[in-house]
Length: 124
Image (cartoon, rainbow, N blue to C red; front, side, top):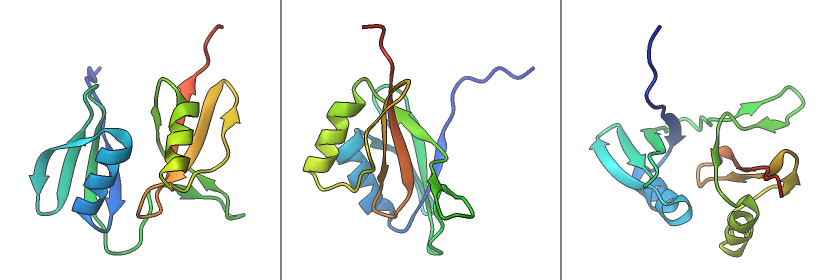
């Protein structure tokens, strides 16, 4: 059996630099590798994403037949409620804050990718 050591997400974006700046400001990512077709970004904690150039309006989330969106991935943070407020204060389009097995909310990045933020439930 293969031994997995890490993972990454590929996010389709229309402007690599604009997205890198946005993800740096809001989620703490920095560029770690560049190529004409993609940028690789990483956080201090090792979360890795790849931005792939997309000029076709493709999104990374799923859409159900009734039009409801489902994020294909999310980021786990220590305090989703605090980040939710920070996103709202900065004008990021966010969904409702949920309290179910922790706290979570979804947001849209500049290209309309629907992404989830979640903090795990605590025993307090």
